[in-house]
Image (cartoon, rainbow, N blue to C red; front, side, top):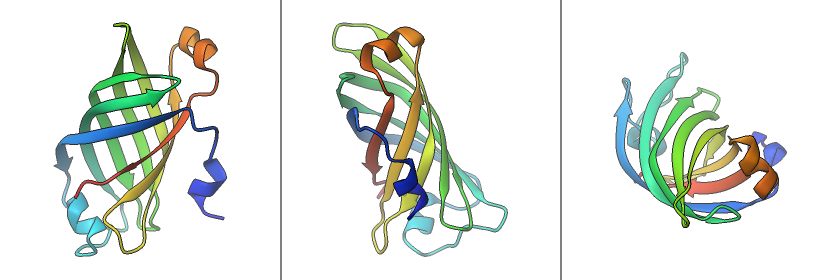
Length: 138
């Protein structure tokens, strides 16, 4: 069983993100996912800025999101992100996103499993705050 399969929880939303920028530190995500480079033994970090839509128990626009990817030599990617969700009725929700991502075999794509932290009033409103998304930077 993979690390991603062990972490699966209830899917409460789906995200459709557009990557708006990337900052790499020595190796690019495109080179890693395309097989042109390997993750260094000391890991690689890539900051991915994003925005988009979220649908499900939480519905709205994701604004000013940044995911800090820590890519490990064993193939796992640790996620640490922050985002602002603006709901359809105009409320803003600050989210902290933690999780893992695993690259798909022979595809320039990663499957993400994330645990999102949110204010207590939101947790009581939506229940579990776990979500999944697939993001392709290419």
